[in-house]
Length: 215
Image 1 (tube, one colour):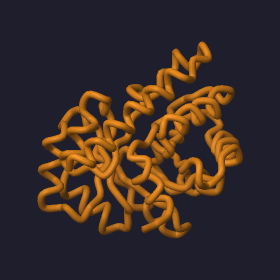
Image 2: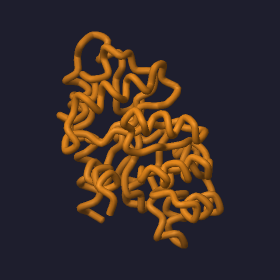
Image 3: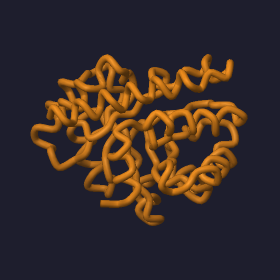
């Protein structure tokens, strides 16, 4: 298995960071790492995302964090963020040119899908896994229903995943979950309470680990 994908599997949770101020990003990433969340996705719509990616990748070793970019809608953005150090690229929708670019540079890619047809199209185009998004509108049963005939396609639900339903998504067959606001308390970060983020990260990773063990 690709080392980047292995890192995402080992983390079990991908932290989705959107619009994080540059002066808080490293501290938030460290707080997440301390809590066991070692896969971090910085969305491409964040101002100066390329510079932020360089800052984060330069601050952590390869064995400390797996760093990627999200909300990537075109191949140009994919290439820009990969050149800035992103190891994986995630989209909210299916863009085969993004997958192609990631394959060209040996990077992990994950298109956003909602239907079995989209999941198959993305996987056949060369995606490493698919992001079921927005997960909150369909729930764990939808993931389980898709995994039935498509057990070969790794799926990561994102959008509305929190401590109250993460285990249900893992039980349904998800190999990992993506989480944003339910994982990262930006108000806590603004007041310097990074321990609160670490504690939530610990809770998330424990829930995922327990669900995997039970499965």
